[in-house]
Length: 343
Image 1 (cartoon, rainbow, N blue to C red):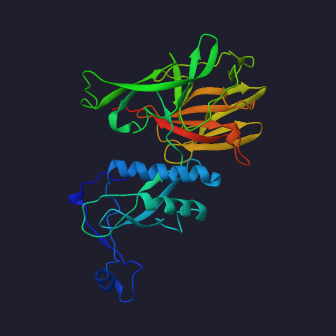
Image 2 (cartoon, rainbow, N blue to C red):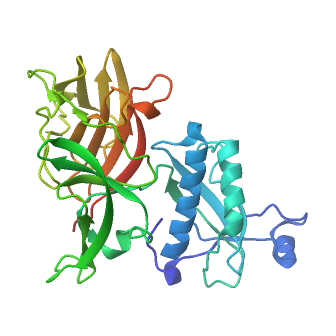
Image 3 (tube, rainbow, N blue to C red):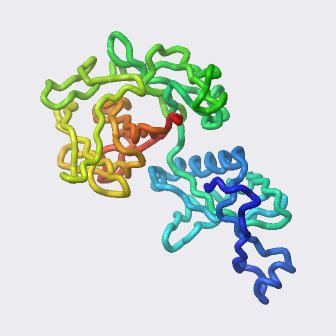
């Protein structure tokens, strides 16, 4: 949503589906809504809506993934939601089952806006839940409100290889915080000395040991293999778009199969693709200038490749892809995302 001040916004009057007689009659009847499509709503309300959208997407598998829901929400003067629709049903349609779930959830939303009239806003929310945390530096406002009380597990780097552990999270204030002016926080993981990532909302893998991939040119790794692992922010296996050659990639192997992560033209900065077993799958459009495979191996215990991929260096995004969640025609499917704060 746009970060525009309330006083800078001009209401755009658009006809509402009110009674016959047009805008004047709709205003007189109290059914007209003024559009403030870039209005910045309170953070608590925004997160409430986001979690509702993501819960609905998770309950309707055909809708979950890296897509987003661009909504048109009409809110009464008292903050209660009148209705929810696709922002543009022709160009950005939302499936009926997903929209119905969101509309039902909207009955519980309260969005205060300090305007003595019905308003219409147009926020966009990702369908993929933000259920990953990377230990380290974060802005205070970027931490999930319930992150201390959620049930978390971590993928831990240990002397014998990799293991998953139940963990708890805590924070401490950053001293001499020149980046965020005292609003920075260090996220600490209790119960895991070297966490690659921390997750919630997903079943904790129980199969041990965890099998890992190998870089191309080496023997297949298996348990305790040589996949290079670094704790963030140290790079592991970065790839950057190559405007001259079009595609860049790097080879690796897992469970006897070669696989390749590629960066090819697509989107504004390029797109990430996974090629394995004769299939080539789009993963995501790049938001940053590079991608990095933070971990590769079998996390969900089905003997197939899973990936944790970082998108960008400045304020990077992280995506967890699992083979057990793959849809028809896919090798892996995104199940969770996260990010780290930088300035």
